[in-house]
Image (cartoon, rainbow, N blue to C red; front, side, top):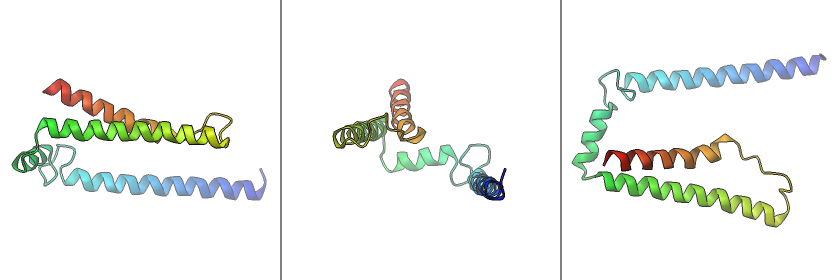
Length: 118
């Protein structure tokens, strides 16, 4: 390996390590606020549920939100593919990454969970 390739490798590894440390720090912060349910804090799931119930949010509201989010995400995905196909810039399959497909799948899963629980 040349010196330039070694520097590039070290730089990428350092960036990935730094990003991992930031994510770990955010996770610790959210853990101690109670988001994951193990610690009693302001973001504990029970307290979030009570807060939403006090505001009058019901299961149907959550279902409508996630269903709308699912429809928007899926429509955006198909529109992006269509525009890319029409303009000819995507002769091969467009690689949008895992995130673009994960967003609409997660919204669909939440819709299924809400429908199952109601």
